[in-house]
Image 1 (cartoon, helix red, strand yellow):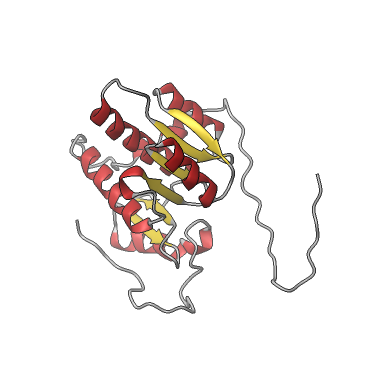
Image 2 (cartoon, rainbow, N blue to C red):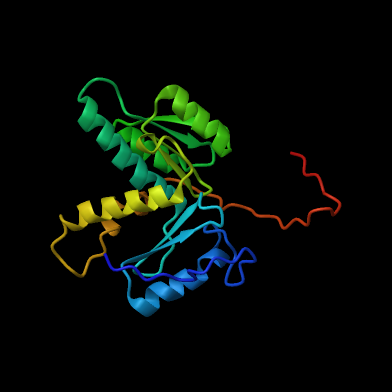
Length: 212
């Protein structure tokens, strides 16, 4: 693979963009880089190396639910190849994940367990249940064969492996390898989804409490 790096020199002040691949502000320069270099896709990492953001060749951000689906199906497939018919592959997702994602996975005979929001809860449940994969909608992905570490580099390497395997099965050079792996685009109008609401907060300021 040909790799083009952006902002290789580490700077804890993050002068180039927000160090968060979960928000558009953290991916704008990556999107521009994918366009400039005509790349097949782009990978962005959080400042602590725990979260991964992915942009495709159309410069569209791959939603976390799409990425969760790709990783979960890959991990479940590995589990089933190694274990045969003995047991059902399981994954752990947080409660914010889309119902369409859960239905897709369960339709492919993958057992979905829901966890409290937060990587610690998800990771602990995955370890206790010996899941094949665990992930949350905040762009954190954990794999059984990666010891459920919050390692975006491992997740990126896994994504590259999946793309390589898929690319081998695609003959037309005009099709982006990731497109056949994005099942959420095929869901149609069966489901409704509310986008994440992010409220700006300044540490030390008075906090407004929201009750429901």
